[in-house]
Image (cartoon, rainbow, N blue to C red; front, side, top):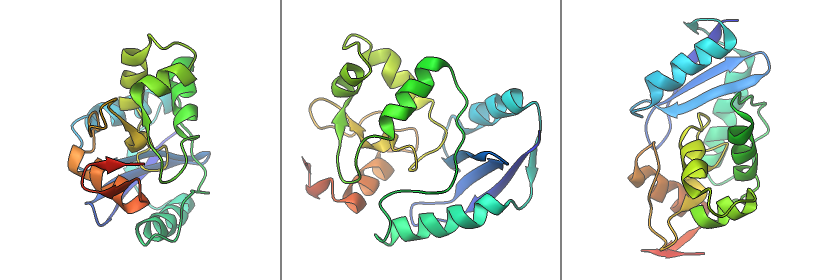
Length: 174
């Protein structure tokens, strides 16, 4: 099954979106270092190629991203599909439970997953998320409140958290 791809401009830079009939399967910033790897994984999973083309999900996605960046949307309704290992899917599902405007530490996330010693495995699965913003991996921070571990670049993570109100002033988190 071919994966339709397009570029969507955002205030934080262009994003590459991918869609199959089940939903959006890719939403990454164009300059993410892992983007080529993520594309390869999707082509292998869906046994198809990346094809620049329109898809009905893209219109919904672009509208919802615009509303998000305009502070008019806190949750996304566009369908998503995120193939991965059982642990990755469990991790990504837990990310979907972090409320808009909130943060969790990597330690808190690993406890939620049932193993507080699994911080590294959880952080790796978090980093393997290929649907930025919608699966809000940017809401996971260091135990000391630091902006660490965001493949879309740390300055974007900070900007997303500021947009959501999770950072109320320089360096202060909810």
